[in-house]
Length: 407
Ligand SMILES: Cc1cc2nc3c(=O)[nH]c(=O)nc-3n(C[C@H](O)[C@H](O)[C@H](O)COP(=O)(O)OP(=O)(O)OC[C@H]3O[C@@H](n4cnc5c(N)ncnc54)[C@H](O)[C@@H]3O)c2cc1C
Image 1 (cartoon, rainbow, N blue to C red):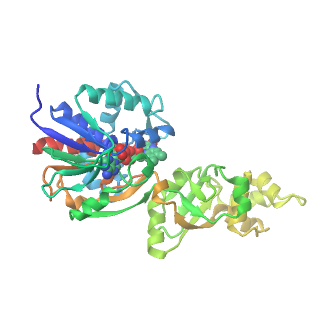
Image 2 (image 1 turned 30 degrees about the vertical axis):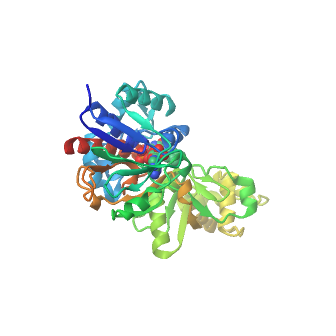
Image 3 (image 1 turned 90 degrees about the vertical axis):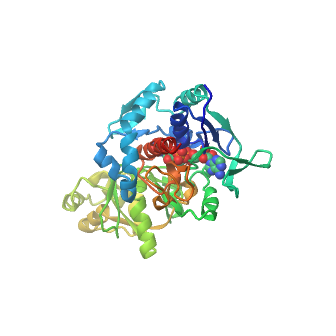
């Protein structure tokens, strides 16, 4: 059967590939363009650390994870949601399971077999791939302009176009945010791309870094001092040479950014004993043996690990209090100034992107009928835990539905 319609999908990440699959299933002739030599590079990177493909929490709570963009994404998330993603994985021969945290993982914990099976399926559906071709803007006749591997420019006009060029984190895997200039030149509003789910820079002393870089602060609670909403993130942040990384820090990305924007400074408070009250900690600290050094005192009485004791020293410029009550207050609230968030190149994801005000409900660009946007290049952000990929799958499927309806 010859397809009667053609679709140009630009960007071969999860959002672009799922759009390609849905369009091809409906009988559209799809060509995917990407400027790297292979597709799905960030998807594979996500698979390296035990990929969360989606999350199992109830849908109402799930949608709220997208904050101010929840309303705009709700339709897409409901139409192709976590259950659909799990069924889709199983259908590709990669069943999933729900971890204790509610996160959903492929049983293999990897992205490689899933991507391989997916690309085989796309091939069977007749999807064509044109690699090493960089989208560089719209030509005056409205077609898409690319720069090919040989540096020569060429233009492509399809019946519909789906853009899924990603954000700007980890640019070496392809998503470098270079598309923003082309969109702005076409007067399509893009909210500034900024790091989301990013670590923070902290001015550790060289001695602390030398001894403790790479060590986790086990089971602590972290908050931002100026955060009115009082968000507290529990978990095991990791001390790095330049600051702190890991789940609890990523979870505070929004209040950290807000504090830096509003006040120019951000102070993090770390509770090293979140399950004990300050009184209980003080009571235990009061049992100090006369000959105990400060480190032995903290280790024996309240079980602090060396990296935690280091954190207390860093927070007080090595002037540890001797009184149990004062020390207990410090243990419950060690304060650090964030110098800056990690640059976007090292963030897990990107906040900002094509603004929803530029799109209709089917994710079609109002100024460019027949052009749809999906994935991380849209203006939403979400925590880690499967919410990022889920929104990419949901909006990719929604863009394909929109494109089919438009055709
Ligand atoms: C280290 C790491 C771990 C992660 N782990 C998880 C996880 O466990 N769970 C989760 O939900 N999410 C995770 N994510 C996030 C997730 O991988 C991304 O949200 C997702 O890949 C975004 O999909 P996308 O299709 O929108 O864009 P991308 O995957 O970024 O794909 C965009 C594509 O567009 C191409 N492109 C860009 N510009 C151009 C251009 N001008 N011309 C042509 N092609 C272009 C790129 O080469 C790329 O192939 C992780 C991210 C990172 C960095």
